[in-house]
Image (cartoon, rainbow, N blue to C red; front, side):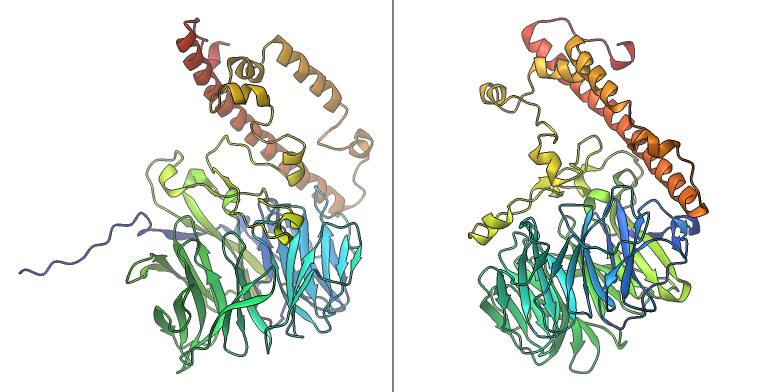
Length: 529
């Protein structure tokens, strides 16, 4: 029998990393010199937040995602903590809400203005006072709104419900006291029904986050875990840490049996902490080491050998921490499947790094962009606390589909398709009615409504009160802020125009389909309207 090499088919075999140009980086950022093994950076499609070095107390910067180039040394900061900030996390369902924790043993919830920070922000919306020692790690619940988890050097994991009107919370809804040492990492299953933790006592635990019950525990003497991840719906855990011989190592575990790891893979002999990142849509795993310049990436499967090495991105710039853009903020037209924000301390630089699937076509590639978790919560905090579990609400990344700006958009009926009358959808489910499409295209009645909307919004310029717009900027900083805000507004309007054109073409096709079934004359193309 002749020997045949076993080739493995994969759409992501040739994924490559593309670093942003100097003009697209964030330069002059005083990145923190803290030795905490956290990411120090959090990103969403609107803002980038990074923990900074400061003389007294603790602070972090919040920049517009388009505010690239040289950052003003006097840029306003969020500076309400009395000790060094150790971790920050954006609310996954509200792009204007961020949580921070500090050495002062407090957790604070901040509301960022829509236009960004114009002055230092020192007053938080909520302050959580439950821990007795410094708080080192924060995590939001993946599907329930306003549920926050915090862990500190008092070995406690606390569960907070932020739905109430109280500004100061002293009593968490649940305190989990299963750990005997400092908790190094927390991770959640896709529906948030299970929580995994890594502790300094070398044990891996799977916990029911609602009740605090210990479900599974691993105490492997050949692997010291420091970070943990749930691998989507594969029913597996991934941990990164060190081996018995002090080699950096990653391990795969069966979620239902933590007695022996499924796979152990040694990487190298460096000492920096390994940061794992997993994309459940593409089943790709990214491993970035603290102090390294390279990023390894693998493809994960549910069958042996479980993990397939793809390639490695190499750079001369070492990273201290990493931020990750949510999938809804990626550039799908360039086939971008993941985006890092590298914190390069030696150059005071934040460098965006895009992971791209090489394709010749510049159109939307549906095979590499399945439905992904969106910014709409599946549950309220009270629903989750009452015992309900749900998977994330999925959304499409296809251009032209609307993404709600905030949860309030969905509750007020501004989301995509919310204008459909319930009786119509009951009569003909799954099909847009002709009258509704004509309203969307701009029939006389629809035009009258749009004219009223224009008349109501005409008194606003750039989304501001005209009295504020007519006042000239008094300082160079105000002028720079005004300029960046206008640039953001121009980009937003261009995106809206492109989405409207795509939506109009879709509606025209649907109208023609309905008219074909009814024998009515067809509409002319969009350019002839």
